[in-house]
Length: 222
Image (cartoon, rainbow, N blue to C red; front, side):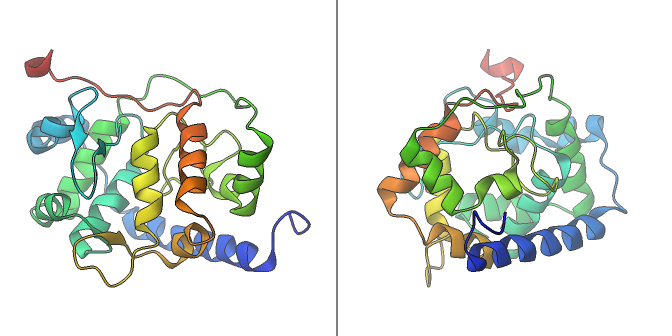
């Protein structure tokens, strides 16, 4: 690893691992209940329960697939929206209404939808995209197949919608905006290395992988 990645990127990865361990430790005393989460998901299914549903903020993109993500990642994401580290008016409004137990229950519900395992070895990226991924040390945190992150508070990326991945990656580069952006020093340092075109190329590759995420349509939308 020392030969593959610049010192600055290796330092970011190390810091990210430490930070994730702290977040995981904080959440260990909360256990989510799948059935309770199912009853609390009414506010979620209007976007995350419709295949292909698009969000128009901050630009048009498909809402992320969250069924099959890990409990720790979903809980951490909701907590970040509630705190304001992730800026999105709708998601912050929803997260602000949730208790820590609500978040744990919702996380357990969506994580329970996991029913497939991504291949250990993903399809080969182009030379250009492989270089971009190596530059950001992406596999060091998200796993070599981008579906087995080194810490469960990190997202699975394989198979996620390309347009969402692009918007999410770009949001880490936004500064001084009260309604758009994500406050994460680790990801900001990595994302700022890329041009928008490079972000799109990375997102397109990750979306093409056979991942573990999906949309589980609710009965009212079938």
